Length: 159
Image 1 (cartoon, rainbow, N blue to C red):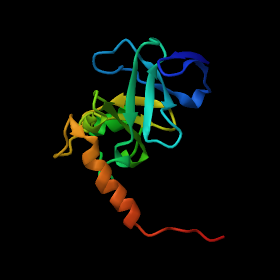
Image 2 (cartoon, helix red, strand yellow):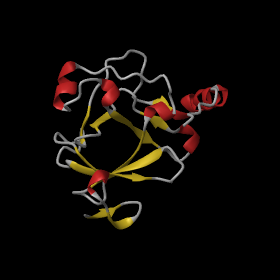
Image 3 (cartoon, helix red, strand yellow):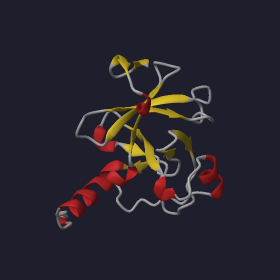
């Protein structure tokens, strides 16, 4: 499907790039179909591009790339809407805000976009886990996450 995008112009994307968000996102309820695009091949950031509005795109990231201990505690109703048995089955993305000074990047850990990877259906939900912020510094999570990855033992599988 051809999609006009903010970062890349018009691109032809296969079905697995699309996410349906039936309720839309708060403030953008009329936009229900989105696609996920890489921001850079090796980086953790992605573009969440509206298919209906080529001028509407958000920067998103998997919160666990920055906050390895991020825990998703979803209401039973949210699991049912997304046809998930457990939060562990979900793909999770948070909205990222990048101001003029990228060192001040923040993300919304309280209202992630939760996607069922099997059905490609998503919803922005409120998490019930205490201690998260809607304006969480990303750099606060980057340093501990990098240290944790460096300190973790290598895992190998043998044939």
